[in-house]
Structures are given as structure tokens and as C-alpha cells.
Image (tube, rainbow, N blue to C red):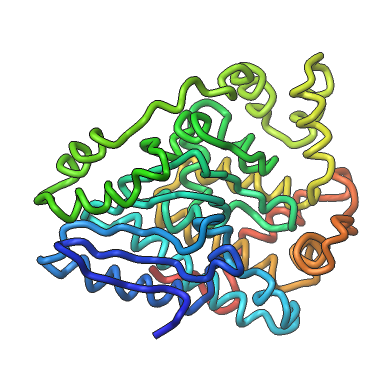
Length: 349
């Protein structure tokens, strides 16, 4: 059993705690495997009425997958990368199909893989400390862990905006996007857990009733001010058109967003847009199969993924050398190559 994740059964609750605060509770392959196995057991255990997932430490719920460990062997030996993503995606699918209440307490940083272990559950509780982002375009990856499914289903073009820019959301904006389902002050979380343990839980409605006693109002969502601009610019069908649309908007938001996108991996931007366009028409499991195809391709050559992790997480110079360096150099053939069936076959869920 890993020391990085803890499982407890208490008064009808299955409680999961991520216990790697020194690395912001980043997910390892072993953590994903153990979580998947435990959910399989708890789904069939009649005494477990609901599941809670939370984290140790006071900074992060989960800042993502442990991508540094994934890239270390290099593209010439990407078997570890494929094993990690396959294990993680099966766990994400397990949560999506989990029939009992699955309650995520998102008290802190929630990025990448941390989104994957929470957003597919029935209840996502955010606090004043929650910081959400899908920042994969900055490291040459894609917003995976089911991003193909939940991002296109956000209001308007909000999902494209979040998936392409990696913008960070807090408070009411997280609820507005549908990422969180309720807001609660962090000092209430333990009392909320105790209330869940002290009251009978027969279904999701019982959780809602208890939650209503603890929920707070985070106020208005600041991002709503820019929704018309977001929907107009990010509804465009190509990355080039999105850039052009942003360039003609006389607004600080548009200029800042244009500058952010200009720093991202050109090929990642094009692959992500294709991913989200396809994902809007796919069922959840089909999205996971597609994402596995993409990450297998990305990890199989000297891609921007390796360079992005180096620049952002290893050397931390934040000066990646993207290849190709410009959008015009990224051909349609390059993009579509990331959607082909892997040599070893598709992901089996």
C-alpha cells in the first residue's frame, strides 16, 4: 500500500486522502491504480453509502499528475508514460461511472490530474482557497483526464477558453463554469464531513440536504463580465481565427488573452482545438480513448511535451523552445497524426 494515498471507512463513508503535500499531492501511477481498485470495491460494498476525496496539507488538493517522473525516460522509452496515462484514465472513468455520491473537497490548488479525480464525481465543494486551472498547453500537452468531455459542455465557449489558455479561476468563477457544485468556507469542511457521517445517506439528495446547511454564497462571478467576448472569440473554428478575433477587440482582456496564447505550444493549441471539437460529439468513454491516443502520440517523439516540462517544471526558466515555433508551421497532417490508434492498441476501459 502506498504512503501517498490513504483510505478509511467511517460510518458509511469511504474517505480518500491524498497525502503528498510536499509535491502538492501530485498523482503517481500507483496512486491512480490504488484509487481505481478501491472505488471498484466500494461500489459493491453495501455499507459504503458515499465517498469523500480530500487532501493533506494546506496548499493543494492536487496540482496534477507527476509529469516530471513521466518525461524522465524520454520519448525513446515512453512505456512509463503510456502506463501512467492508461491507469489514470481508467480511474477517471471509474469516478465518472461511480453510482454512489462522490464528494470532492477542493480546498486548494486543483489542476490537471486533480481535476480528473474530482470533476467527474457528483459533488465538487470549493472554498476560498480553491484555484482551478487546466494549464497543459503551457507544457505542450492537452487538457486531458476527461477534458475532452467536460470542457466542451461548459457554457458557451468557456471550455475552449479554459482549455487553450490555462487561465486560473477562483471562487464564484469556478461555480459559474460548472466545475464546482457548491461553495463552502474551509473552516466548515470538517463539520460537513462529520454531518455526513452522523446522518443516513441513501442517495445523492441526502448529500444535497446536508450540504445546504453548510454552503455559502461566493458572490458574483467576475468572468461573467467577459462572457460575450469569450464566446465570440473562442467560437472561431481555427486557432488562427481565434488570434485574429482577439486582435481586433479593443479590450484589455483580449490583449492579455492574446499575449497568453502567444506563449503556448503552437502544435498543442491546434491539437487541443481539434480535441475539443471532437469531444463535443463523443460519449465520455470515447473521449478517454481519444485522449489516450493523443498522449501516446505526444509521448512517442521529441515533442513539445518534453520541452515544456523541462522549461516549466525542471529548469524553470519558462523559456521553452517550441517546435514548430509558429502556428503556420503546424500542418493539418501533424495535428491528425495525434489522433491515430497507438501501435499497442486503444485504451481498454
